[in-house]
Image (cartoon, rainbow, N blue to C red):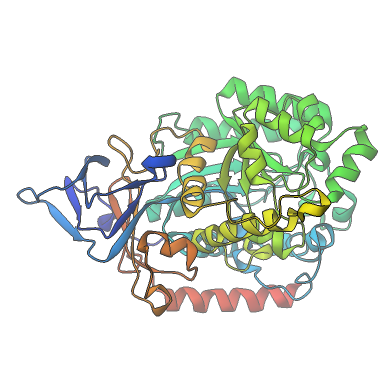
Length: 483
């Protein structure tokens, strides 16, 4: 399966005016979270001005009348290959550890080059149509003697679609018991091979610039299970020598807590600290099960979180204490996780879930006054502005992309324009909150990535969704036959 040929539709505009927006969310904090606009000028791939603006001669005008404008979403944790594993009956009602064996590990060896490419393309298109431009994929499909290069495929696919991409190069130097019966093709790598490939990828793809389109991250799949402590220390040291960030999963379930205590006599976050895996250059997916000391340690070190509310809910893992983490100093972002534990891996549904679940968590913790509590409460735990910030500028902070810092002058023009033309958005007193608060998927009138139009009127140039759906159904039938 070849790449879509859409390069001709993704050239940056010399000058582009987004005009007459009904509302503008900036992704910034506090009073700066909204801008009255109603116009945004884009020039040379960056935001040149926001305010009441008149079109320039020969300037392209995008009519945003009755539309709301957001910064494009920044997805900080995904497993794109899982786009062909949605709703697997064998794992749909299982918690994390048995689900891993039932679904992603069961099918991992079935991904050849074409299926992997198709899955990545489906996931990227799904994200784009939700208004996402920056994607961090935690890819762990690597094994010794692998006949195709999953890293190269991912970079090829995002290049064709015009997206901003961060490859979190996963993998393991040891396996855990649930993987013992997997095909020999999925045996672990040596530490030398793992580190060597990260160095190769960094030299080939990594761009350290503030608004880079390509980044590489050191990302062993799971610290407690994928590598022994000395290997983790060596990966951390090598990442910092290369000038790249570190990422992994942590504290997703009580199983992490039990394993850390049983294996190392400490909490998962303490284990990460012992292995040099905390700091402003580190972020973890999930962080659901934490004690107060762990929250304080994560905050003191400036470590980040990729909050994945839908996957954590779907697997019954719980709700991450995002409000407490941010108050402690943790950098908060949002990730969709893999579609095999989500079934709708897009940033709009993830933002909607984040908004609701933080409020639900606060409400669940509320106690009556006679029991020492403060009565009802929970709606204060996350505003729509908070969620937009976590899912955009929060993600840019976690990924180390200061040039993607929301809708303000001088920042990369990553812009999502939503038309609230579905009945679910009719009657909104505050249209700005519609994409997050009302859920669903608003029509994406236009999506710009660094000033390039990559989606227009809900369509991705060069992509036939009917054909993509047909290919997905065929690949799913093949996988079911092999599973």
